[in-house]
Amino acid sequence: MKRSTAHPGGYLLQHWFEAGLELLFPMRCAGCGRARETWCQDCNRSLRLITGHLCTQCGIPQKTHGVCRTCSKNPIPLKARSYARYERPLNRALLQLKYRPNKILASVMADWLRELYHQENWNVDLVVPVPLGRNRSRQRGYNQAGLIASALAKLLDLPYYDEVLQRIRETKSQVGLNPNDRKRNVRGAFQADRAIVHGKTILIVDDLFTTGATLSACAASLLENGATEVCGLTICRAQSDRLTI
Image 1 (tube, rainbow, N blue to C red):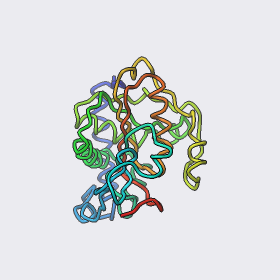
Image 2 (spheres, helix red, strand yellow):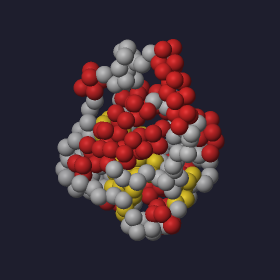
Image 3 (cartoon, rainbow, N blue to C red):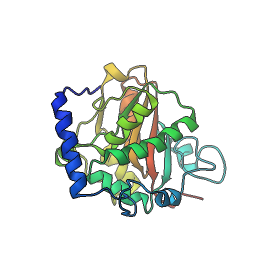
Image 4 (tube, rainbow, N blue to C red):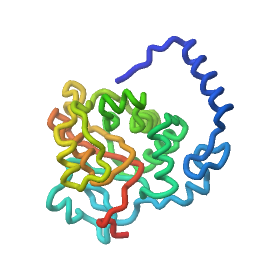
């Protein structure tokens, strides 16, 4: 588990730095741009939550309860759930979080996932984010999934490990790839720390679920290294022809 060793004076310096940024760039709603709000009530009311009959495995909305057609033929190695549909204004908020480390926004989203976690009655041992590759991590300086996952772990009073799962090879962006290419792109791309995950139930956190390829690749490595079970939570689920509601 990553622990901070920063000098107390560093926190004060960071506080004044962030205060200065707020003066120069006042807080605006990540969804609509309204001033002085991180996430406004109008944007919150516009969310279309993923509810109703869901696949018991991948969490896709469907007309009846049970396992969806895709998972019955090729089940993903984890149970996954998403909070809301990937559409405006939430997609704008995720894009902002991807390129600006907004911890307040990440905490708002983590609270959504806490609600989802309790709805599922899961009982996990630790929380991990889907990791970035080394190059993307160096470019951005942070992992947006890590911001959400760490905030969620605090809300759930669970251990948070940001390095227990590593991306051991660089992968190209999944955007624009079909489901089979997505699987090939991330297959074998992750390595879990067996000493930490063995015998544990793991919760993986990411921002977006599209086909489940990335979460599945992460779960495969965790299970191969002794994890008992893997669950996944994401903020959004992308639209696809498989959505039936």
